[in-house]
Length: 220
Image 1 (cartoon, rainbow, N blue to C red):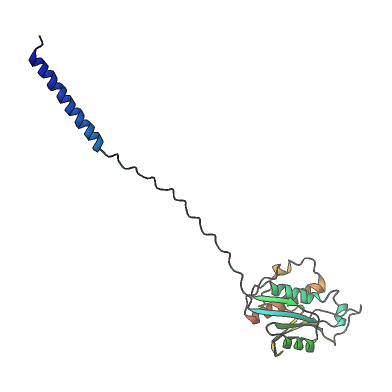
Image 2: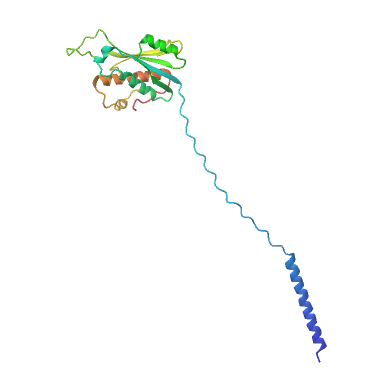
C-alpha cells in the first residue's frame, strides 16, 4: 500500500515545478528584444573644389600699327619692314595691349585711318634716314646715328597726335626696358639689321611706357 505522505510530497513537487515553468514562460513572453541599432550610412568625402583658372588680363588699349618706309632704305636693309614686325611682336607680349598690324601708310593715310576708328589707337612707324648724309666710297649709306624710327600714337575719331617720339639706330636704350639678354634671342640678326632690331624693340618699350603698361621682356 502506497505511503500517503509520499504521494502528497510528489504532488507538491510537481505543482511547484508547474508554477516555476509558468513563471518562466510568462517572463519570456514579456521580454522585448533589444532594438537593433541601425548602422549609419558611410559618408563619402566631399570632392575638393576644382581651382578655377585665373582669368586673362583684359586689354586696356587696342593698337593698330602701320608703317612708312621710303624706297631708299631698301638699299640699307634687305627687309626694313622687319621694323614693324619686331615692334608689333614686342607690343603683343603685353596682355594689356591688343595689337594688330596694318598695311603701309603715309602720315595722311594714318590720320584718316585713326579718324575711322572708334576704339583702336593708330601707331604710325616711320623709318627715316638723314638725306644729307654722304655715302661711303662703296656707295653704301651709313646707318648708325643716321637712320631713325619716328613713331606717333594717333587718337581714334579725332586723328590727333597723342604721343610721338624718335629712336635713332645705335642710340643707347637706357630706361626703355631693353636688356642684352633680349637681343640674344635673335641670334640670326647681324650688322645693321641688329641696329634696326634694337631700335624697334626700344620704340615698342617707349610706347608701353607712355601707355603706363608694364614693359615686357623682348625675348620671345
